[in-house]
Image 1 (tube, one colour):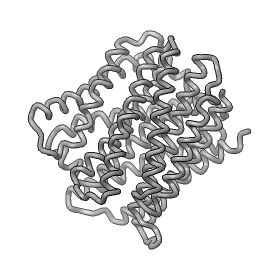
Image 2 (tube, one colour; image 1 turned 180 degrees about the horizontal axis):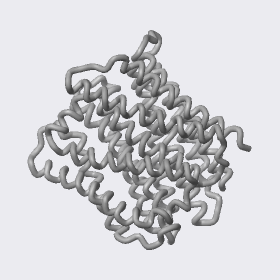
Image 3 (cartoon, helix red, strand yellow; image 1 turned 135 degrees about the vertical axis):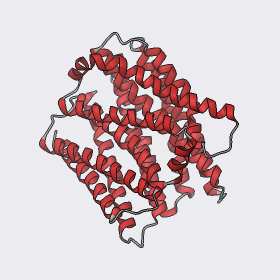
Image 4 (cartoon, one colour; image 1 turned 30 degrees about the vertical axis):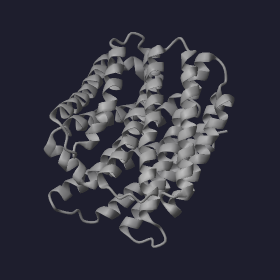
Length: 404
């Protein structure tokens, strides 16, 4: 089982390297010139491949491994075609979006990817029903599968708008944010929490209020979508529900930390020293995320957040890189599938520094835009940050590849 997990994670990390490579190209085009590349089309390829080829690929592999361990049977052959289906559709989007944007082939591969994820969700839900232990972990995974399934409606809406060339800014943004919200804050977050809580249970068996924490997160996830739509006119009672959902998630996170931190020393035995640092950075990023969410309910702050593109990009990268990617790397290290080589460690350090540097630059660019100023050579600095991410992931892949 471990060998099969390593196979799929190697593919996932190679896909992350491609994501970093495309990000480098995008930043180069902004700083300088690449006439043959359509920036918007390549950006669509970048985001879709990151979601499907990197994160969903890794999450599905970790989930199959989880079920295999708890059922004491190798389930990778059973899910093999769904994993391959996810990979093929990811590469289909990678190679079609740069040339046609939202067109026949890209929409077809995107749709097939969604159907593939739905089949995976149904089969894995049944798998979880047959696992009697770790019920709280199963709850997190089931919520993740549910949110992944409904996120597709945002993707379908967006595809319909783009294919029919319907230009309506509000509809476009609502479709985009619907997909992003239930991927980032649903499928990605809940799966990672399930994986993390499995480790917590192994080292700290008696964590109080686990179900209350879960239901606070799960119950507030649906209305929290409208945090992305605060720029719309809405009744005061709807706004009140949105505020409650934002603070519910913040309270749930505080409750979780309150239970975890006094016994965190026990949890560190589940992770290597580098993995513990990655968990720490990921936890800090999650805390910043929930604080920003709560702050965004203030109208003046919400206007600033959605009015300046660098701040939006910084927030999305905070979750995608700072929260999810760092956690997945830590979970990979904790699985002890590979020894921690020099290349692997160097790659992780450079990659983490690249994330922090990139976030600082984007936030500085956003603040400067708010103050109607600009930062000298900001695009060149962002290009350098993208290079650090690419270099770090190259070394990480090199470290994994050399291990038989």
